[in-house]
Length: 143
Image 1 (cartoon, helix red, strand yellow):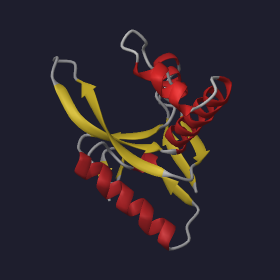
Image 2 (cartoon, one colour):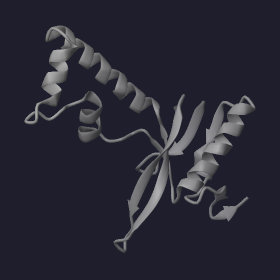
Image 3 (cartoon, one colour):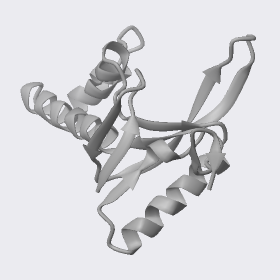
Image 4 (tube, one colour):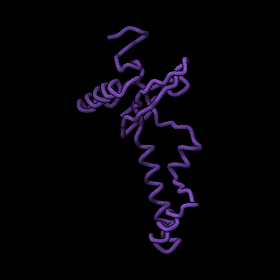
């Protein structure tokens, strides 16, 4: 499905997205308060990171002569476990986010609308028409 969304710089993009999910995403407000919101995101990035972790773990198991040796290394208290996904999230910008909402419920409403479009066989969904409260809005007017 093709998704139209605004990236972190406010530029409109279209991306082919196969998997969607909602995650907690807090937003620091100008007055110092925090809004505990939620984000609709492309789950494919997370799945790819998990797959890469499994590949690296398997390769280490082969090189270190077995799974027991890999587990022994990971359990040492002085070693910090490092994963491909962790390296990605620590050093690369997160480009999986599609839209931020001011509550989990608002993100859920938009996810429901997306699922209805998919159920009807739709191939395009425009996230740019939704406000932070999950309601359809165009220049401040609600439909």
